[in-house]
Length: 254
Image 1: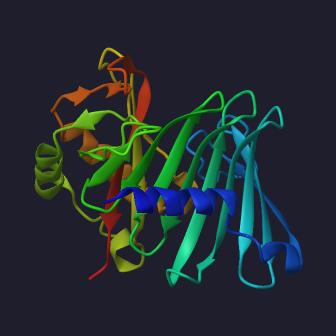
Image 2: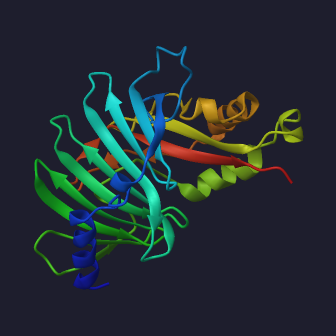
């Protein structure tokens, strides 16, 4: 990977996706309540209500999702559309800090999950990342031409677990609930809170409204069999921090 990629990406930041959105007609707004994991929740759920998303769909099949906290401060803006140059469905996400300053901007290929991102702190650029799948990250510091390879995105720290042991745990203990096997499938997202000392809380379901209750219960049951260590998330400066670990469990009908 050469500097040309990053220069091209910076042009994407200067001229973001959505140039055609202003020329398209909005089809109406949709307001969705979200939990702290940014997944939809029931309108009756006041306990887990952390954010609200305002979604605007346009006549050209593009859309914009703006997420606010309960103090009506902008947290995240995502634009969904199609990248004509690269010929792939595109997702451009901007995140903001508590002061309303841009903290990251990511351009993602929705087909394969590859992405390009730039990160900021109080207006100062921290670095740029290119993700090309299979834990293959390329990172560049500001004002540097050196590209470093890594197996994680150092700007998005998350806890680590023994993946092989986790997969073995699923293979050995996971079963498809008999009643759900007749009709239900989907992906349950387990969320485990791990503090800076590696201590973890009981797992919860991050996407409760998106999955069948029986599948969710099975995911919570099987995670109890995992007895491996989970290391806390580490920042780019080497400091451990509190963070959430998300583990997807896929249920697919034959």
